[in-house]
Length: 166
Image (cartoon, rainbow, N blue to C red; front, side, top):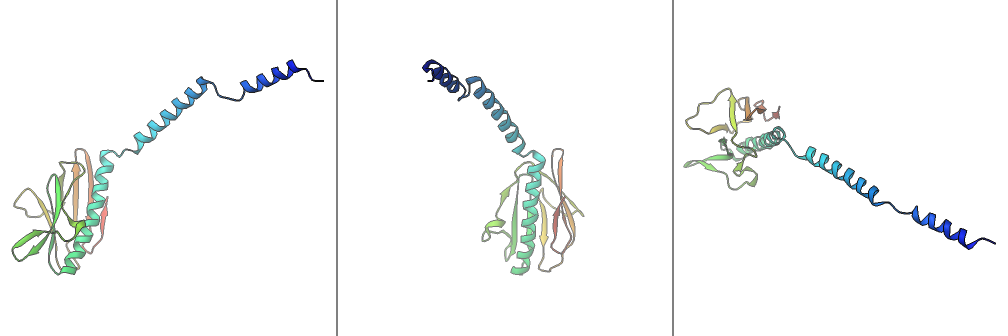
């Protein structure tokens, strides 16, 4: 026969070994909190990454505007200032903002103010930079630099419709 007291001692030891102590749970929660903090800190884009993303978007929109100029058989211009950029179409009364293509609407830069430089330099009569795409499938190559503080990103166009962000 098995002793009832020995059985109770054995059950008591097993019951004490089944769960976690409060201290063990707190240590795990602290470790998880530290890991989440590191992951979320690394997931936030820095200013260079945000400028790079803006340049990628602009490069795609420039390609679209170039193709739109060929399809419409009308010049389309990219106009940018320190805080925003937009696309214009040449109409009967001059340059007009594009309203019928949602992707070519006016947008703000993610970071501002943005300094814009273009090579070769264009003649400009105001503070805004303007790049015009004609009806022809070949344009002049250019390099557009976007700068915010120490961060700079270059959009290079080869003149035949390829835009590369460097």
